[in-house]
Image (cartoon, rainbow, N blue to C red; front, side, top):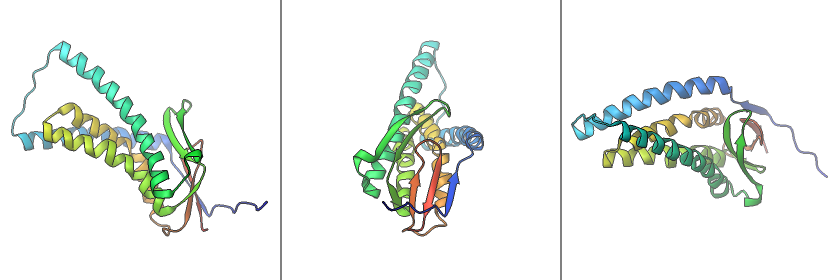
Length: 185
C-alpha cells in the first residue's frame, strides 16, 4: 500500500476571528442592503404589529435554519459537480463542540474545484435570496440574504488562501475542523 504524501501547507480558520468578522459583516450588510432596497423602491415603510413581528421573527429563524442546511448541501453539490467526488465520499452533520454545520468529502479535489465548491453556497443561499428580496420588496429575504452572505465569510477566507496555489494542486478537506490540506500532486 502506498503512503499518502504529506501536505505542503495546512490552511486553518481561526473560528473566533471568523465569528467576529461574521458579526461585523452581518450588521454592515443588513444596513447597506436595506438602504439599497429603499433606494430601489423609493420609499420607507415601517409599520409592524407585535403579531407581525413575532410571525416574521419565527419565519426568519425557520428560513435561516433551512438555508444553513442548504448552504452545507451546496458544498456537497459542489464537491460532486466541480470535483467529481463520489457521493459515497460525502459527509454532512453538526459539530456541536464548534457550534457549526459542516459538509465534507474524503476525496482530494483540485484547487479549482474546491474554490468553486466553497463559493457555491454564497451565490445560492445569499445572493439569490437578496436579489429576490429586492425584486419583490421583502425585507425578510434581504435580511436573510445578508446573514447568509456574511455567513460565508469562512468560505471566502479559505478561497482567498487557496488563490495563491495553482489550479491543479489538490486540496483535502479536514472532516472534523475548518482546515484544508494542500498537496502538490
